[in-house]
Length: 618
Image (cartoon, rainbow, N blue to C red; front, side, top):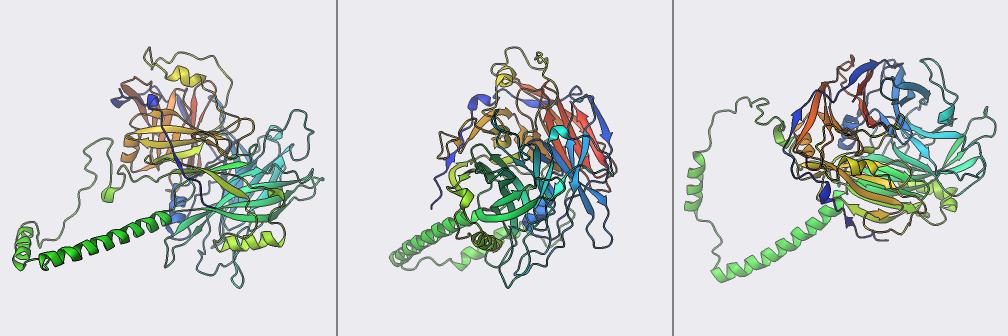
């Protein structure tokens, strides 16, 4: 079945500030900062090989995994001896509100998996560990309470091809724990979704992106789970390295007695998309049974089309050139005197002297810190397309038993199985010509609701600025995916939210399909220009409009730049440079960052270093 024709994202021009001139330094954004110790050192993301997809992912990975109900981090509870891997523990970090330190909860210990030796040209290294929450639709008010609704489910992967199910009490029943204490969780033995076909042995490392419960009921203690994950395929003689995104149907069995362990089984595997880079972001809508992928389109089809066009143009030019040569009597040869004259002219611009040392960081502009070979130049950002998938018909009874195992083996080879597909593509939204600056989930607001106060930094008559944006409500319940797209020199903030009620799987209007709504909510002026000049930039974090802070740009080791919200007709904006003062991290630098807003309008920035957690209140 052919993919649907893509539509194109239309930005709201009224969100653009046409009167903005520049950012000015301020000292009033930062309120306080401090350090919170961690029970164990944070686990850095390391690339085990030089494959481009794996190395780039490890370098840009956010160590604070953002999920709809909070953020998670992996800590090294016990260092490895020799070549052994360190014992990792999964911790949940509650952001908290101003004046209160973040709370760190231990969830479980990562399972020790003996990595099998892959074969057949696949990479022998693993991926960084990952965790996702298994999202579920909100139950009806009169629905009976079951063991599933009273528990929260997590999927955890150690990066060696394994996927484990973690069952823990509901978030309202958890208590803060200290180092050395364990939470009341149960972990199922790991499963390996992507295995190689015999006679090859081994599994493919996977990285989890999202998971949600399937609407089809299988029993009081048995649920179906759709997991979105990706795996890297190294470069071969025929094609470069790439990323393959899969949908895996899992069956989770929760025992009636707490003393018994849960179980997890692989039922079906489907190859969704192939991209040059890992997914920018994934948003699940359990109520509608749909998934949205923010992905860079694969260059394979584009290259094939371009090659065909070049071949056709070359054939036409050859035909036209042959006719022209016959008409001109073969006058296409270049005269030797013309070549000698060209060499003489070029001699004035050449020298036999060796090239000396290149100039080091001679910046001509405060915001233009572009390095050599175009590093930091605008236009080098990745592209982005939004692909919406919905559940296929009869998902609950598809690809079971031997058919599911055959699909898993086919997926291990990077091929599509012959069973019934789990998801089907219904809509494609291209963000071209806009490039992607950042993409992450919106953190849930914390703190108590306070009456709005006038923004003293915004001029009177700000038009449809903070007042209108503060009155805006999400299109539906559930988390939102925030995308920062280049809009000339500005950063357009686009929010992808879940529509309430029944989502139309066949697609709706512009930017709405499969239960998702795509909306341009605000713009940060000149942020694309500023971000392109920060060659040490590691994270660009956004917050929804309506608060005092617009975004935070965090470098890899030393500085964080805080930017205040700007009204549509405001000429100058305020930003503050903050020394992160990271704890001693063994030259690891910044490992993760999260920017969360509160219902009172304030923001909190969490910075993860190897030796501690840095807290910045704004």
